[in-house]
Image (tube, rainbow, N blue to C red; front, side, top):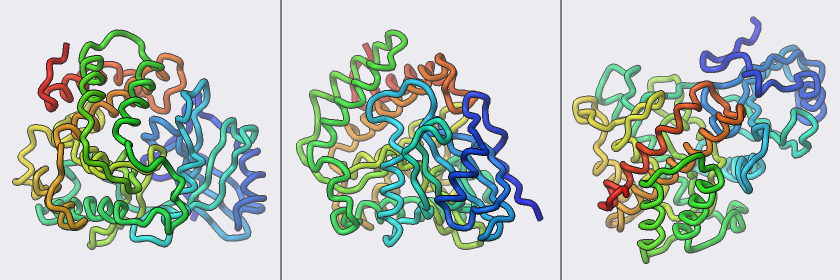
Length: 360
């Protein structure tokens, strides 16, 4: 039976078409089992930052294979953004830990093959829940189990000894929050397309109120439930954690806040839990999620929680601004990227409310 793309993949967008013949030749040389194979390419839904493709490899020396290619986008890129090389490195490092990740197979830093650097990983077939209310599931206990696994994986990541897995130099230790506020403020300024008063107020407040208590672990940086692939069986097991572009050494509370942002949001095309009666669905409340994380990591609580939540939403707003700017340049990775401009205002005003400051 011929391999067919997953339902969330389709023909590549015009701006993201790649030289399939050149890719096939490279795969034959660098990925075991690909020699002599026929290649089919489809682009995944999502991947707003780094375009991601499903590869069907048929009739090769290793039999039929399903792979994934993740690459830098075309066009002019912001400094240090779209670091697929770092994604490849952390995937390789985490393979022997309790954190489920796809098997990373090969890295290509030569931009002449498909236009930009990329890496290849094995496709993890399973379920991705795009809507955080999990409408596909019928029973409250099923939803609760999925969220328990969601928080378990995050806690497992934060327990990894990053030096022991070869990632001691994966980022700077200490002062993560202050550096991130500065970094994302600069990224926002570099991709600015107009005036958003709430973003200005938020950047000032975040810079002046960095929490005193510091801590350093591996952090994912974009930890959402749709960045996990779950097994298709009855047991809700996470089999792969995706989209590691923003991973680094950082403060674990920033990751936890990002994981819980859905309780404050309902974004077009992304959904959220804001205004949802989560208890009736079997989904834990935000407080229950934080308590479960604290139990798994041996903590008494999370200090400065409103700060970390406001910071997480601010960073999401800065990312949205970058996506919107790329849409104006014609380089965005999906068709709905143009709507991200309005999201910047909505997100920054929400973060100001959480921080208790005026959005002006």
